[in-house]
Image 1 (cartoon, rainbow, N blue to C red):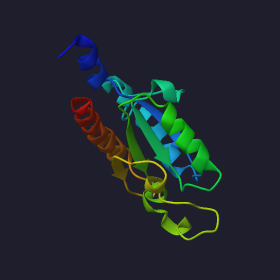
Image 2 (cartoon, helix red, strand yellow; image 1 turned 30 degrees about the horizontal axis):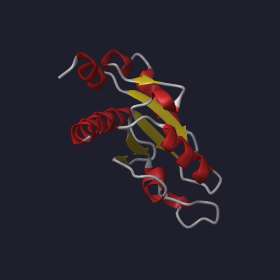
Image 3 (cartoon, rainbow, N blue to C red; image 1 turned 180 degrees about the vertical axis):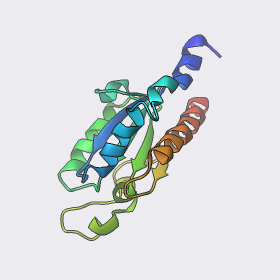
Image 4 (cartoon, rainbow, N blue to C red; image 1 turned 90 degrees about the vertical axis):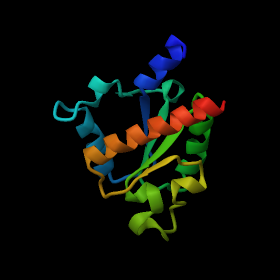
Length: 144
């Protein structure tokens, strides 16, 4: 295994994408960065550009205005890329499921690799989901 491939498997960069959330999941994502959990010590970094991301972390119920933007952002992500649906809203819609303004779940718009249920999911569940997404990334890299 080359040095570059080995380095990429050890430090996933995550792009957080909110598609109309109540911000509870977003707060838990920020909690993962605080000194208590400190995911950055494992190499997990939140990045500001989709073009640098290995993992896309999606929160919130997919509203109709965000569908086109999510598709465009997904196409801009480098391949291979894992998609993680974070929270009950992005996994299945929760109480927004049959609303007039939602097009949930996220898997209707883009393929999802890992689901992290919970309203909001605990930081431990988020970290476990990111680790699971790393496994999916390894599978995708081997299949390329």
